[in-house]
Image 1 (tube, helix red, strand yellow):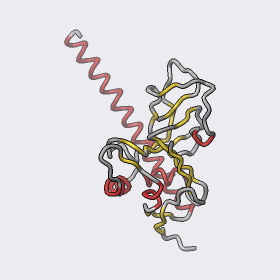
Image 2 (cartoon, rainbow, N blue to C red; image 1 turned 120 degrees about the vertical axis):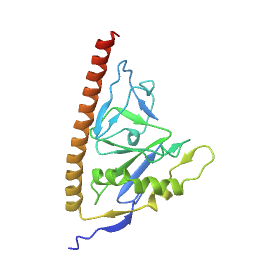
Image 3 (spheres, one colour; image 1 turned 45 degrees about the vertical axis):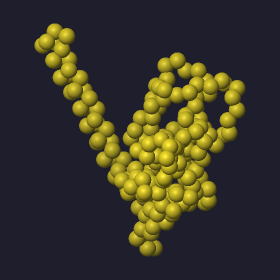
Length: 193
């Protein structure tokens, strides 16, 4: 076995991945919608469009475990290509401006997610996407993006290491938030606010 990585295009709607693009919609009312846990990031579900329960959606529009949720259209190139990994099946659907990448075989979904979070991918998109108003990420652009695809065992090792590092980052972010609040509380106590 050759353990060297080869650069392969992301194969859209073929054997490797499927991209469905079609806003996140919740199919039933929820007055106090909380963010659902996602891999390393928190998907903010507090400002979503709520729709009638009997609205018909295709099953492929429901967010599922191991989906890579991606912004596929925006007036800002800064938003195009932003991704979030969905860690669990959730009762939310996606629509316009958003899409999902579903890995079918030979790629660990988290490995692909980490690849799509790289500056290299963002740089590629900024140079490929053109639009006066709404910028769009289409399957042609994704198909032409090359990324290293090592053997699955190597992908799993990379994911394990990056997950560990991200967990440390998240703990530190938590700590910063806690101490920032403690400082603010102390300042308010000193100045009587």
